[in-house]
Length: 321
Image (cartoon, rainbow, N blue to C red; front, side, top):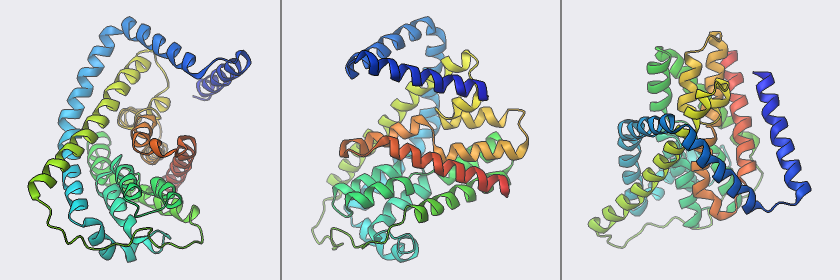
């Protein structure tokens, strides 16, 4: 594992160094990697096709049935003053101790209940609707992007580990790591919302609201499914070439958690690594989240670093328990 990781780091270092020395343009590098991807896809055509089919099954059986209806409901809540309702009920309980404005409670609830990447989606909505400023938006992105309880308890605990108790342990570690990260990034500043939460007294046509909510939910669901299909191909090709399972997990969390659960690691190490992946999320989900916040010039490198730190915290909590 250490030798493979070292090889990856050395390779990345020399590639970056070569680009700097030759003064190669960014677009040229991207085009080169896209061209190489086409060649790799053609060479591994059977593996790629099977990966796409498996990815479609995952989207149809797991992603769309859970993500789409929840997105529709959340979008309707936003249009019918759900942010105001959540801020009144959950704001004093969750947001005040974490030095967040009350309006952030909506994004936190979406993240804790449904998981990636809806927390990032609704944090972005809060910022675009001017309920929070950019500094609080950046902080909220790292606090409100987490694995949902259904995935951790159901998929990992029940399906992968055949142990619901381990699923609950992973869920507790995941939530505790969020709280610790919130305390680490907490700053002594005013937590008043940029926009005063005022009840919308306009009569919103339910048909129009439902249509808008469905369109937004479809866009979100299709974006997530698109990322899953692309990374299914990447993981299948890498797995076909015997790359270390932990590195696969840092690319896509579901596949990585399944491989780790089937590995020969000791149980504490196995749970710790899975816990790390749940909090870190993996490259696939990081890019899903970035698809929402990158338009606002948020540093994906800083976001990834904080998610990595959260993963380490989650690993330590799980391992200690």
